[in-house]
Image (cartoon, rainbow, N blue to C red; front, side):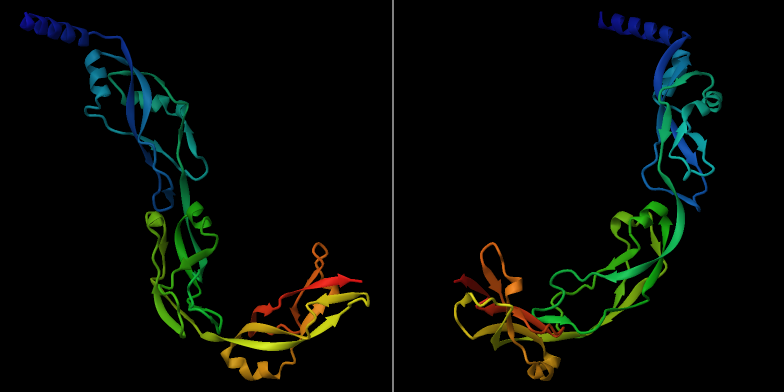
Amino acid sequence: MVLCVVTATTFWLLNALNKDDYTTVVRQPIAFSYDQSEFMPVEPLPDQISIEINGNGWDLLRKYFKFQSTPFIIELDDPSRNSFVLTRSLQRELAETLTPTQLVTIVQDTISFRIDKIISRKITIEPDTSENLLSKNFRFGSPISVDPGQVTVRGPITKIQDLDGKWKVDLGEQNINQDFVKLLPLSVPRNLRDYLTLDEESVLVSFEVVEFVEGKKTLEIQKTFLPSNVKIEPDVSAVNMFYLLDERKVADFEKLDLKAILSYNNRNREDSTVSVNLSADPSYLEVIGFEPATFKLIYE
């Protein structure tokens, strides 16, 4: 009985496939043709479209399972000008490639893509000076020198614009506490390797570092613009300043006549306090804090 059912089904299927005037939707492979030396896709290109076709059952079956199916080539003269193709402009040419089946319609109205023009542009090399680059209490003692300062990058225009004119270079070290001179390799990040190339393989980066030494100094308080009916608490004549000092500038620091300034004009009106400020602000001195750092204003 099973054999009879299988035989009958087979004969029915073969007879049905021999008939004409079937219509179905299939996936048609496509490919884009353009000047690859001038343009580059920045997203994966679509590789098939949905089409509705009519024809003999056997032919439709072959199309459905893509037996002997070659991609339909879409010619693009300047793909950077437009990001899509209207499918109605392809119907006639596509129909000619589908024989012996007939094209009824292309299901989608447009085929979208992102293909950019390839350009070359000079960008600035910028060392990555993120946290923990220098050891504690160390500072840059000179500007960072980069040779060459610029490199030429080639690739699709949008990927280059995303760089914002800068190419970050990792120094490969942290907690640096001595002068730095190093030839650093230039490598394209993994997510951009399919798109960008550089004309240089390495750059020379160098800079000096200097240690800032910790210190403490007692400063005389100088009150300015203080009204006669206002007093300051605590009633002291000096404060302690805790600081970091460029080790090369110790002699200059000792010559400074520094004072702790309490200016009534800089008072905090909300809590009636005034903070300590320094009478001078040399670049080689970093103030960590004062003790006491704030004073209370007492109005009589």
